[in-house]
Image: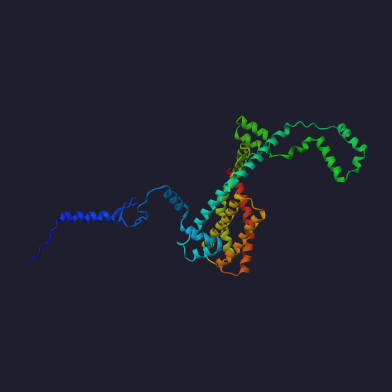
Length: 375
């Protein structure tokens, strides 16, 4: 005789299965695909399963997305500072997920540095604007000073007591020349007119700007010739803008061009490395070294700025810190390119000389021109 068996209702069995599935399966809010609820992250898109939006999560995601500010940063920062060249060597050798990408490292540290430096820039910019404003005021007020030239009779009257008391004969040749120059200025006040000169008639340009004269007349007041080219005409247009603002913001425009210029100077540094180490890897390998080295430079300068904001340290300490960046470069190229200390020192010295004597001055000139044209 068959044993009694319990017959279950199929519909009830299906409901229990569905209920069990509902307890173990969830839907990702990002890609809308199902996955096991026990997963902390969606296996399809990588979003966190329970991603509750809080201020902390929002701040972390922002930093992580743009600067990869995670454990890799701290894992990369220590060897960057204390093991010159090792971090770049490990990255090139294939350990790339373990450490922060060199471009991201450079971007993050440079942003921190320029944020700290911006407070100093405001101070420099304010002082520079005041100096230019004073220069414009002196340039425009010099013609209003009533300097009447002395005639020969007045000069003779001044020099007579000196000659009677034999004072002039007792003066040295240099002192007599100085006295003669004073008397020359007294007889010809126009001799001092060019002490403050911007190269054009500021009052005439102000009058043209006040009546909203045509641009052509304003440009001619600055001394622009007929038939000037595009670049020259653009230069004079910027000069009019410079005059309107009394030079305000000129230094700020220069500092604004520095981060962009440095980003282009870095590949030039890598190109010089390629020249000095022709058979030591591809250009991309030298570029990795450049990113990490410039990151260290910004780190060192950020430390100097931070300490000076708290306490004013002597200039010789600042100099020693900057000098240490050169010896850091020597050790970095030694470890990265695996050459002896003496050869590394010679190549690092030559690299620094070429970069500072040729590349850096050219970069400053280019930055000055671009900042003025984009002012």
